[in-house]
Length: 112
Length: 120
Image 1: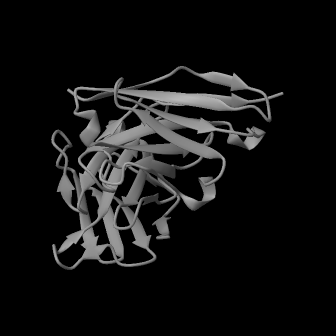
Image 2: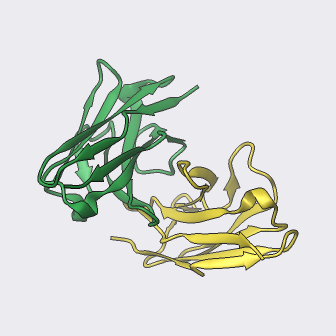
């Protein structure tokens, strides 16, 4: 099974500042024949199901603000919120779909 | 517009079973992969298993194998998740999620979640 490890567990960022969340997989998520990383990011607000933000490590879903960006390849990935807004307070999860599925433990983002 | 609508909250006694449903609309159900995810109170997301069309048989995450049964009824576009021998630590919100097409993938669509409370 592929183990996904997120860091930090939580972070507090001032409004308008950058938030960076890391995700590390126990094996590569890069499928060489397609040159695609099988990694997604989700946002979950209290009382709601998760919402898909990014797929293929860096492809933003339709309607997701461009302050959200994903980067990385292989085993190390990052979700960046370039300018934190109040509505971005949530828990963020990474998920691999290279071999069945598994999620990271989540990162709680709060306002400082 | 794809929608996944789950059955309502349940309260169960330890040792009993629960069956949660997930009805899909706006999608060709036979070409739709349904995944189940558990979220214990205040905890993260835990993939339980799923049914993908190309296999047409359920696949379980190892930790859920044996006590969880996943089925689907194509005539009603409904997927089911049953947990047997419930324990207090099974108290959780269960989500169905899905994606069009076959195969493990990112999850475009989510149900609203079903809270199952296990208490004597």
